[in-house]
Image (cartoon, rainbow, N blue to C red; front, top):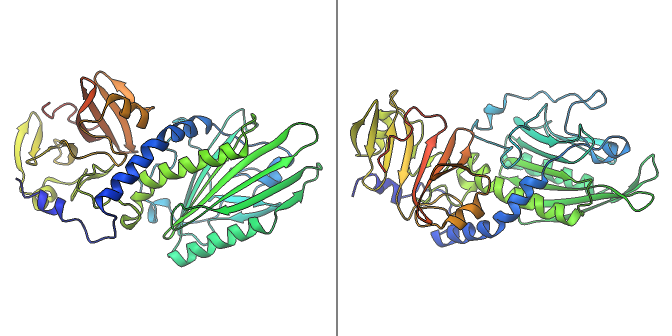
Length: 385
């Protein structure tokens, strides 16, 4: 067996649950994935104008909204691989300034003490319909993030009932969740005159270390707030498991698991490595594959582009995606876990990050091969089947 498996089987010294726990979490995510898919569909979103926006708040620039808070570029503390819009329609990403919330008519900016902030939002019907907004702020340390999260929750709790200028009575409730290091879900809605309830909204607040994730979802088409809570919770599960892991090794059970093909690589190998880095990491063999180079990992293969960068990793049975999909998984399991995957011949393409994707190849009704590739890599199809 190749020496590559020595570092693969000796994880980095970071806190991580046992493999059984990782698998348990993967099974739980599989059960919830259907709900996450619904969240991605229901998450078409927009802002409700008029008095509603005064109390419910807006994460987009407008003449009446405070200007964006100056902060360092996002890549100072937020890796470029982060895809906060994952699961939302691909045409959406609109973002401006640092995220903020309106609470009983008062602005609560989340970027004031942050070293970096990023946000995406989706709205339909020209800002007169539904809304999904996601904001992430990274602070100098966990203590600052904890203080901001505590202040934000206290602001919501201090205003359980309010009345706006149109006579609508707004109700806000807060309860803790088990997401992240600290988590809360906020539900708020207005009792409008007549049978209509205005703009029910759910807000998930999740702190992981020095990072604070806030997800909002509003529905004006009769979706009850309880359903919005479930949908936003599914979004948190998905984003934290897949995306927040890009921010901190300690935050993810699978970061050190040699049986997981991560969105950025496998074991000590990372896509984008130079040939020299690969040689320093493994004792793998190299052979020509057209203009590219095949990397023999003993069990599994890699591929170096013409510019000598690692652009592809193929694994064998026993290694899976973070969601538990790998060689031997059934076709139904893949469809359940990745309903929005693109079908190209016998291959399903699943976006792993903004720069990488999983290539899932079927043999009959089961997954035969699992490959992680750089999007648009120079050597498509060069790995031997």
